[in-house]
Image 1: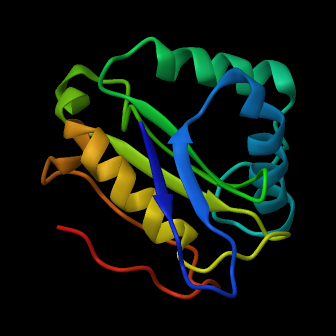
Image 2: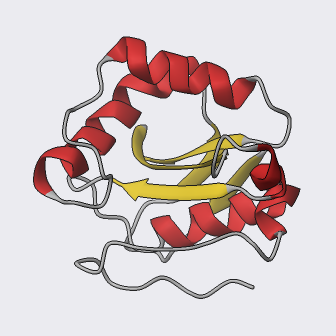
Length: 145
């Protein structure tokens, strides 16, 4: 699945596509910025490549889960995924959805494009029990329902 979004003539196009193992370093760079500079991840330590690879394998191992990345001018500028909300069986009908955008490459609409693509791709995130939260230091994205 690949979605191309042209914002306007003065900005480059944004491509949303399936994430691959080759994207894990860029994903870690984006995520670790939030670990070090915000409280949004609830992590206290940055992720190394091994931890990110194990995370990636869990997503690949479940057909209901997805990993998408947004690219602009050949750079990964954001990623979105859905995965287990909780490990308990009763939560199997739910999904946690997360979106992170790069602090180094500002492409307006990246979060919204990732959200829209993930909602189209992943039936589990359409479940009414899906919860959303966001970093309030960032501008809001559109509400999806």
